[in-house]
Length: 278
Image (tube, rainbow, N blue to C red; front, side, top):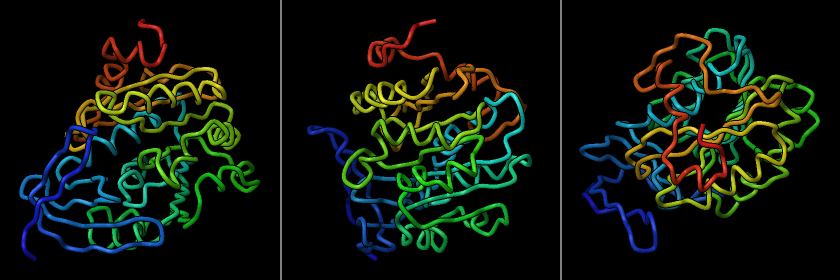
């Protein structure tokens, strides 16, 4: 196909542009899905005109979303719940931990999963026997008796920005239900946007999660395609700190020393979150 320019609006006055070769486009039952190729970022997936993942820098986001909560636990993690994550990137990283015995992944858009398996770069994880894949509503799942009875060590919320159907995944009742799905020493994490562009998203996430969890912390990772310094909000059910790793895993971006360093935040992030500068 002929190349074209794709523009993602980062703020009302800011756009990022990519000269891409279209590979696949469709409207699913929930969103507009595009797969494109880019000379620098490689294969990219775009949902509703927002870049979700790229071949070149996907490892940054997926490693920081997965390995920080898994290695923050003082014992080996055995069970993980992924809300969203239909591209398979979070799944792939969680499966690198041999202690993990079961992963449940719940994504509302089955077409994202199918297209990702066919056209992206996380195919192996979908065939792993430890995976239970559910095409359905993540908010409804964590509210269900099944999820709250099954219990998980780690819950990872890999959702798009808080617009449209995803809005419910940013509201206080959702986090209360996640808490009820966790084991007593369990940990949850979610992305909270790039504060230089999406400051209210971080403030709101911390405020809402604090209503259900005794300790809420924030860490960071620099994801170029998302706009730079990205925030992750993490909380422990028993109030234990999650800023110290309990393991020696090293990826392409994550490593144990970086784990602790990622919890040192820019000064204005403390203003946004109300968290103490320790």
